[in-house]
Length: 304
Image (cartoon, rainbow, N blue to C red; front, side, top):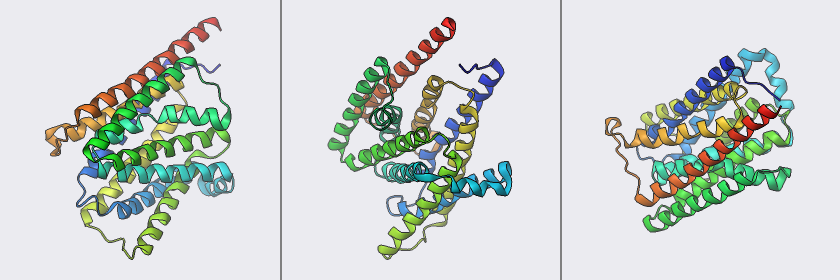
């Protein structure tokens, strides 16, 4: 069993917390877009290229020219994970431009449970009874938010957030399917595929990559924080057990909702009552599952 020293634990906790904090500003960045509902594909193009560029530079610094060999080892699982990330990237941007940040982020918070469900179906993984209960609770919270979407006309935005959560879960499952699949290479590939997909969509719609310069800067900044956050998260995650990672994922959700709510940032977006209720249910399920897993790990370690 892997041991987590105090020093490594603190290092991992800091890096993963910093990653979640960086990601939490994503919703706020999108809120500063000019005519956000018009330039989703253009935004995705520049953001995808930025993510790919950051990951490739990181791989070159870490591995030198040999990093290119990782693409040869991508395989079916790597391509599946990359496609899942493309769906996640696209679903997030479309959702956040069609509904509130709270709706999008609370839906994304359910990713671990979708991941667990796919693991059962595709990898025949065993799930703790407590996780089954948490999955049911999270599903109830998601249904509350879907009902809220029906009432306010934000159903498409909620469904896009659900697509994003599904995409992230597929990426996670692909890594467990073939553990030798290079994770960073898969993310870089996803950035390139996202850019190519958006380019094709714009071409078939007789549209261009042109958008307000402000949106270009925002998309580059967004790609920067996503790419850097992925690197920090991946480095820190190896020092933390899965339970802590699940709980620390709340930083992105809570922070993202808080930034768009605080008047100091000029947005002051107030979520609806049903969104808050559904979100609290989902977050409660995450805390329940995370604390249960942590308690189980402590018992096992004592027995060991």
